[in-house]
Image (cartoon, rainbow, N blue to C red; front, side):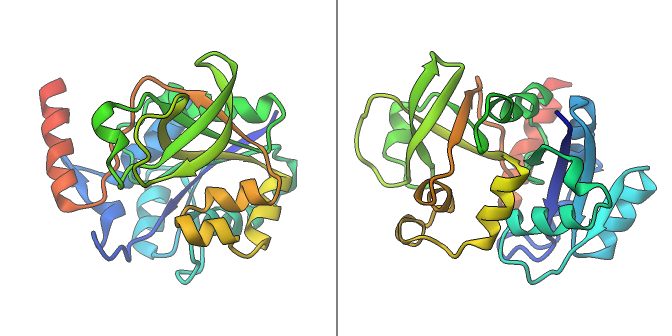
Length: 242
């Protein structure tokens, strides 16, 4: 199966302007994510950006970058817009939407998010164990899973952020996705569903439209950098590992 990894990168984040170029121990964040994608050896890798600063950085590193409209509403839309600019885009059977703010993601986890597509699902994503403390944390997205193969491959049945207490088979959702090309095209062409608007989770657009979401289990949640405080925390982790 031919796979492409596309990393959406946007400089105009309200909480953290210029985030893709933020230095983490001297290396831009988007460069760290791009290097992880390359090391996964899954397939062609592109950065989908809307600013020349990011484009120039990636191309100077020898990578491939694609300019996209800065007004696109989501990372998924940016991935699809970039995909359509690739000459041979219709030869890819799997497209991975790799978040540009997870610089410590494990290359094996990038490989794992592709596994549901290999098994015939429309969309793939990741999940890990949910701690007791996280059950009541409304900032964490939870996913209810019916396991096909225990803690290996499952089917996503529900996504939510609010606290429902302890529920069996509910896990911490990790927001990285793979799509087969038809599912991605269908997803971006549809308006938000009622559940998507109610829960503020775009995963519901897929479930409400009948697209299947397969889930691979991973051991840890990759640290996501949303604020400058997150960046400082991440730098301390990297230094402790050196």
